[in-house]
Length: 78
Image 1: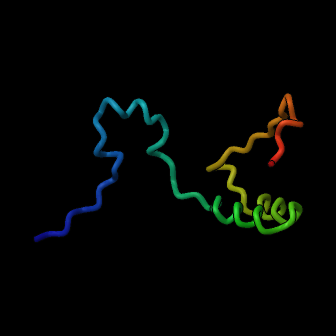
Image 2: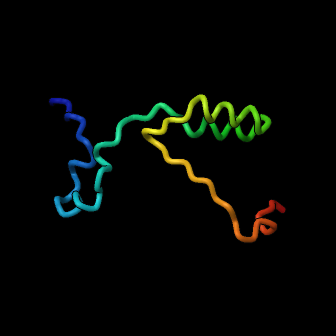
């Protein structure tokens, strides 16, 4: 028996779903590993983890937002 070719899962979707995906099929492998940054953020001081973020951030594959909360005093961990 022949080995089955590896198929792209996006190719198996019905044609009607293609418009829902937008530019999703054009995504490529990104260089920034979010889990690596989460480990840095959790285990190191904020200055060190911020430096890691700026050194490794991939603006072609990710978007970053800055948020200000209306009731910032309510955004505390308990």
